[in-house]
Image (cartoon, rainbow, N blue to C red; front, top):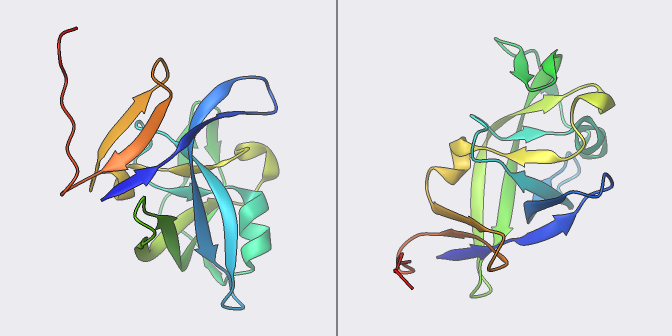
Length: 144
């Protein structure tokens, strides 16, 4: 399985690795959302902007989320995330995900290790590759 991402120029001018996903909203419709591929993030987190669009019932989390910017208020929501596979199929993930409640806490939703640990993650700026792969796909590191 291969899920292709891309390098995306953000509003601040920095180019970051993203994967375009869809999230199931409260009405049963799929909302498109870019996710930052963050190999250092422990869990997948929705931005407050996406949380607002999803209109899902939210629960108070057991712990607060923190990152480089410090600790911010968050909630947990149950939903599904789907990622397009390179063969036209869909990879589906169902679970409870964290979401920030303040717009300034996160500009873009983050794909964390709770999902990425199921894949080999390739983030290669020099060769313009962002990909999540698992069997039957493989990769090799070679000396040029």
